[in-house]
Image (tube, rainbow, N blue to C red):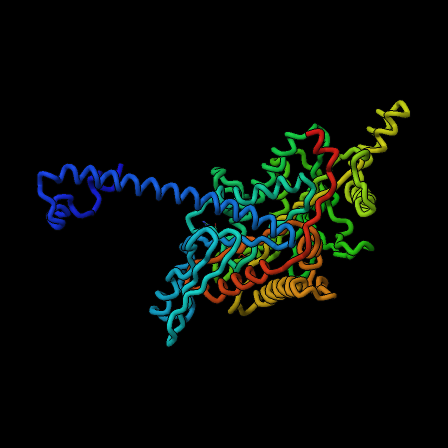
Length: 485
Ligand SMILES: Nc1ncnc2c1ncn2[C@@H]1O[C@H](COP(=O)(O)OP(=O)(O)OP(=O)(O)O)[C@@H](O)[C@H]1O
């Protein structure tokens, strides 16, 4: 249907156009036909241009992604959450006028790559600032849409890349919602009835196990660890007491001889499917520190790091031809025996019991294990204006977040020393942030004027993160398995 045919459109009636243009009434039928044809042509060419634009945009995105991979850039997506009832809660000593202003929305997604922020200060002319990211989500965009952009990273994981997805933003900006889903009151169950509300962590695990189910059986297994960093201490949220009850045990972060970060004695649990994983994570999350803040009632006051380690069995024939690959193999095999002794023992005994002939024995010896890692991080929210008991907690959070910014700054400037060890958070995430992982930062932003300073800080962090070039992201060699797909 063309614009002219639409009955309720507020447009100038055709009779009036004829009158204005001096077209005799008897010719108005021809004129209508001509006009409709023209409108139809215009609509068609508009559609063609739109389609061409979309195709070009896809191409540009694909090229941009390749460039990101070549330069080892950090991908940054930005999500602006909707206004929520707690945004309207009265501030302490704020006047009604200021309160009304503070509720105004000032952060918008003007397209799917640009955030516009209206900055206004009393006595100053308002300024509009724009920020570009790989992807920008408006307040109406769903968990489905957010995950659709993240899903390709999971394919990369099984192709041999390490992947890290990290939510960054001020308190109450939607990090936990984006990573886990809406928090239900009791027991920190985030699995709501409505699956469409699930966040990146449960979805990523479902997708990972779906991808694994398409591979040859027994060629992959998944181990999980859940860690929180609270007041600059690392706690193992899957550690169990002698009765098998989980409780957070303090752990250390160390640097291995190969220069990687490691958490000795960290608990790893092997999971066979997404529901086993969720069960474990929910148990661990019940221990996570949450307190009410000035912004909302269920604020996470610790950084959460959920790690899925995917071990792949690869035939040695086609694996690791270079010296570097060989070093990685040796290290990975050593790591597997440290972190998953049970599984390693199992796989060794199975292969030796099956390998009854020299040929079989040789084949079994050629099997190697390659590990890739998916790290899912829900950072604690930065905050200002805190006093009293929460001050210590908040200053630890703020310090660890500035340590993260310092690390990115040092990598960006290619300084010889990167201060990973200035905070447990950066030490723990060293291999994902500075190493060879595909890293996606999900910036979370509150839309209202009330949080303008914090939103600008987060947007600034995201902008700096995008500029970091870490060198080409390295892939573990999984040639043999890819061939058997
Ligand atoms: N996109 C969204 N749509 C609907 N509700 C949302 C959205 N983002 C956040 N919320 C809601 O806003 C509240 C605060 O969100 P959330 O707990 O995710 O914030 P946070 O950034 O993790 O905060 P903190 O750092 O304090 O833990 C929650 O009730 C959450 O359900």
